[in-house]
Image 1 (tube, rainbow, N blue to C red):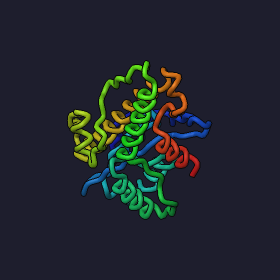
Image 2: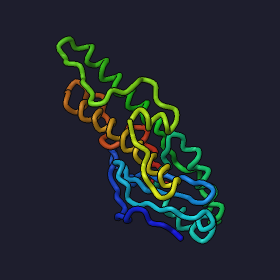
Image 3: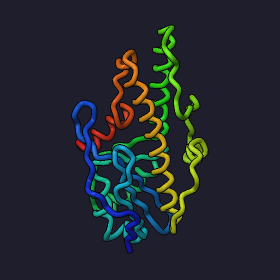
Image 4: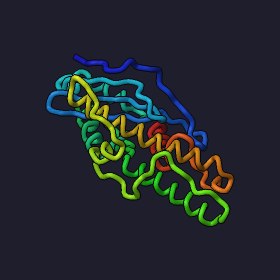
Length: 218
């Protein structure tokens, strides 16, 4: 039996900096008994969430679950796990497809740190410019796993009836935390005229945005 964890909102589309369309992300987790699927908008809002028994996920529900992933980028600290799960779903559904678009939260974090470093360099070139004070300081080195992000962000373990749902919720929470750090970065850039040359997109870091747009176009 499919468990709907969150009400399904209408599909939220948005525009990238260059006008291209993007929907957002999908989170996939599984254990021996269940597969969890979360849809997450481009700005980090969960818009649909389901937990499906493995037998159904690799059976009658496979086509539907593959459809839930369409035009979205898989997101995780290491997206390889999600890619493997999607491959299993596609095989069960008898659907062939190109390699899915993926977003690594490690790479997204590094993009943010890189933009912040560029901000610091621009400030240093102007003797009268005030240093940017970030609401949350970010270590230069990115965490390398989900638990590292959880510790850095000081996120509690999500509560859920199923462990696989708790794992999906944690990935969503980390995604939202990283996106919030990006929003803070965008705000700082836009408030200072001498940082405008950085031309950062509004919702997500540049390479992250490119993956979301490419996923929608595939």
